[in-house]
Image 1 (cartoon, rainbow, N blue to C red):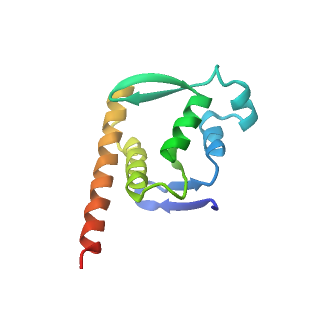
Image 2: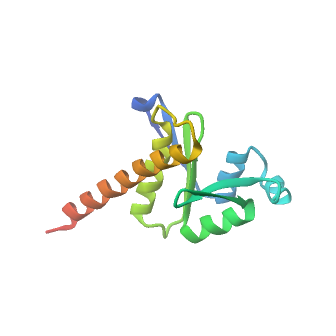
Length: 140
């Protein structure tokens, strides 16, 4: 799997990059090398939401979850970073991209929970759109 990038001028030159390595993607997110991430596992935490309930994960826990679900991503200043494996369902990828694009849509919400909810709605709309398109095109 090689790294690919797409520039989207309509979104202010937003760049979407697919990374072939989850740890590389996490390293960019945290601004630390992979070895620093693993060495400081308990000191670095990721706020993760399950049904609007925030939980804190260590890097190791996050890596385990990301590997099990087959994808992970984040939105930087003007770039969306994605990692997904070759077995990840196209609907999951569509939802991931939509979710991260949702973080680029303004206004940002004042609370992290509300911002995640907004992004999740964008992700679900993306999933639904791709699902409908696949259904329409796959019918003969």
